[in-house]
Length: 121
Image 1 (tube, one colour):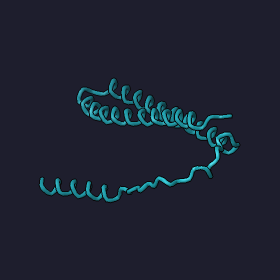
Image 2 (cartoon, rainbow, N blue to C red; image 1 turned 90 degrees about the vertical axis):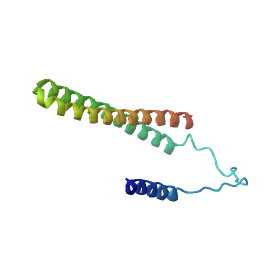
Image 3 (tube, one colour; image 1 turned 60 degrees about the horizontal axis):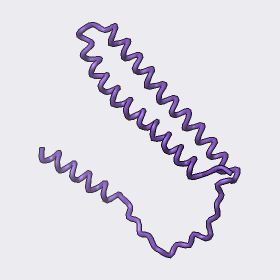
Image 4 (cartoon, rainbow, N blue to C red; image 1 turned 135 degrees about the vertical axis):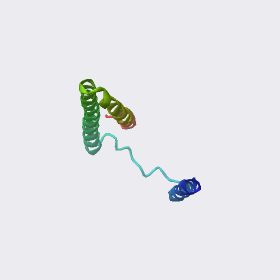
């Protein structure tokens, strides 16, 4: 038990050591930056990233629904002894599905933030 606590503590210390420290100054000149939100390159990037995000969201939801359907069919067709094993895999599926749907929702949030941050002209 003490060895596990030591390993967890050492892992936390190592991860803290890898964090970067940022020192910010107050004399940063922002006048050299221009607003390029209406350029053709930024529109192309927005269109391409929007398409990629849509494909990832649709794929995540589709894969999740297919997995749920297969798991439900296995459960309905299984013998009573195998149902307990399928319930165990259902718990893992639920955890994975929650993570996958959360990632898809996070991509939607990121997409909406980028659309508001980069207005089209």
